[in-house]
Image 1 (cartoon, helix red, strand yellow):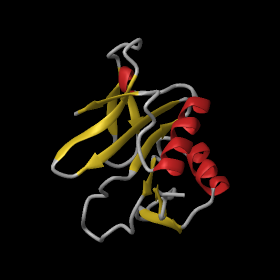
Image 2 (image 1 turned 45 degrees about the horizontal axis):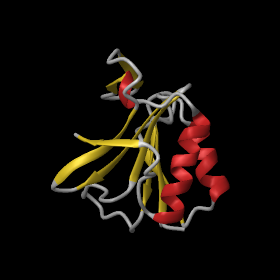
Image 3 (image 1 turned 180 degrees about the horizontal axis):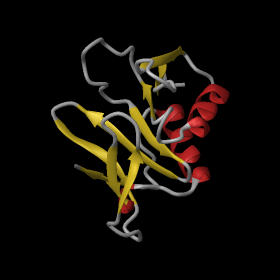
Image 4 (image 1 turned 135 degrees about the vertical axis):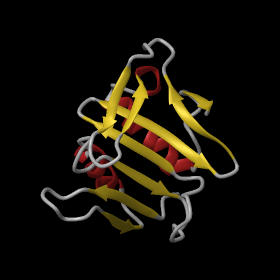
Length: 141
């Protein structure tokens, strides 16, 4: 498996500060549970890191899954080059609030996947091969 660290962003209820919940060398059940737990608010996103993340550095080459409640944004940060985003050109450009807590984030519907089975399949490809699933459309942004 290519994933060295599963990092889930957590915003606890109340006044507690956000924090990362990290799982080193996660197995598939831990990854799937983290994805299914995404809710756009308390658990807005996870990173699947191919290398140990460095403090205060952007996660290079990992896969981010943001969202929950039936809409998921998948992208890979690649450093000096634009990020790769999952894209579904059959969907609209309507904006969806995909992360609702803290600073939050909105994304065009065409950059979201509403099929959790498809999301999990793309993640399986990534963890097995360390690259983006070629059966999906990925665009640089």
